[in-house]
Amino acid sequence: MLVRVFVAAGSGGIVQDIKGISMNTLLSRAIAVALLATAGVASAATASVTVDSKLNSISDGAGFLNFADTGIALSYGETFTINVDPNQIWNNSDPDASYESNANGHAAGTANHPNFLYGFDNFVAPYGALVGQIDGGAYFLVGTSYSGQAANAGELKLFYWDSDSWNNVGAVTANIAAIPEPTNMALLGLALGAFALTRRRKA
Image 1 (tube, rainbow, N blue to C red):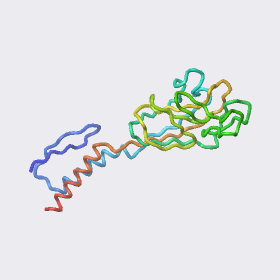
Image 2: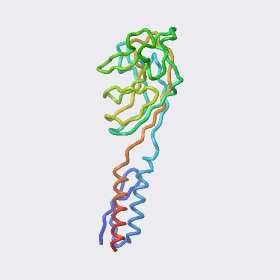
Image 3: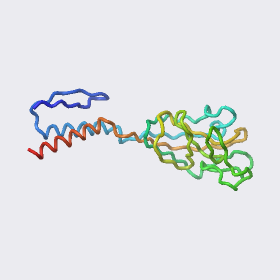
Image 4: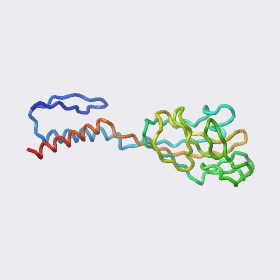
């Protein structure tokens, strides 16, 4: 019997003609393909990024140009998390301490601004909140803890949510982890393994 198998080789692959090999050998090679393909998947891309309340404010007309560069490029549907120490504080009206908040932003009624919500580019979030965006996609609230899947592909950007930045002080550190989805190569290897095991059982 002649079997054509795609075998992982570095970042690419090769097609091999395998004739007369045992099902055990085919199974072991298929599992090896899966392990090679998933070796890079198991490790998440991580970054620790400083987001500054003045330099990375969404305000002052620059808007989307002020983002904190995370260096993380996400694929559509890719799972990622962002975490910030809730004890890290920034302020959107220094030196008034009543305007201090963590990355969750201001809750309604905790300071002097009505409702403490700010709307920009069809998105509304609390003043002082950490907000994310993937490439030019929709904004989303990050706060001190976020876990989700990328709604579109592109670079992950982070902002301080505020209407003006001249009296902002403070910064937070956002710890990011992006977990790639299993590759087609891994699925192929597992499928070949299952096929070989089925043929072996039938024999």
